[in-house]
Image (cartoon, rainbow, N blue to C red):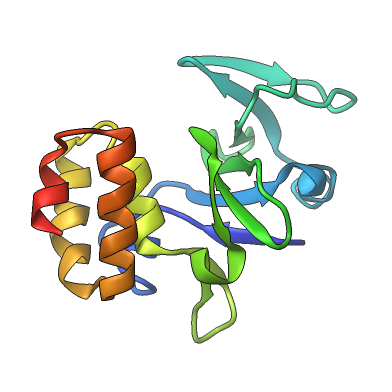
Length: 171
């Protein structure tokens, strides 16, 4: 199963920056049946435009669905947030603009324990859309740690997708 971690842990490369109630990770669409089998005790909900809809065990999500939440009914808690990637084994693709691609080897790294995680620059690109206080904190924490090539890539993406974004000038 191919997957990568997202969120604050990814921004901080491995140690994480704050507590999370659930785990966020990415999967390729073709791997979704494997994850559903592994997480079979969970209830699955599609997320689209702020609307949650229960995903029956015998149903696959529509092609436009790119996010699934996993609910643990006995614990009455959300446990996982799966982002479905449009990429391939070899190419990472940005879900908000699938024309924006990079070699997966440049966008997904491994922790010391072998757990894949999305590069901080890619996570910041996702966070740039909303700029919530926690996103601003993550940017401030991650920006000094970005490699020059990561800064350049993120700045070019921001200029293309979010013209006049204040982070671009800081990179």
